Length: 161
Image (cartoon, rainbow, N blue to C red):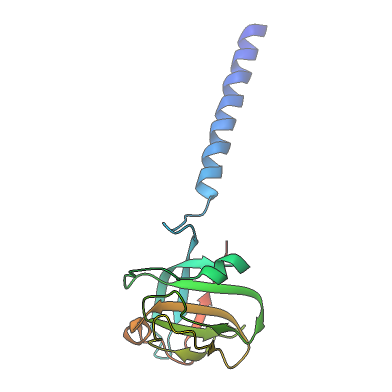
């Protein structure tokens, strides 16, 4: 009887370990081929269109410094969201970026307050948010216009790591 009880305990413990391991794997966030975490960004345009974009997340100083540099191709579904814990005037440039981008600046309430569309590849000119912002979205050039994203568009859900 005692051996049978130990055997049942071992089976239950094994099942708990398998469940814990599978739960851990399910909780892990997906990453892009470039090593950035992926998240779903939800937006509402001025014309009340609701958008969901799967974007790469740049949340650390190193990730924000790398951004979309050295990318030789982007699809219409590609994009990167830069997140900071606070709002400040942010500055970007296109150095080491061979593709034109739309750079969209959102304040801490998630409102698009400034846009820099169709930026020149490889340019070292500074691109300023002009106002304090907490989120910056980079999309392939022309994508913001084709999605109807314009000043006043609001982030309704910010993805987090």
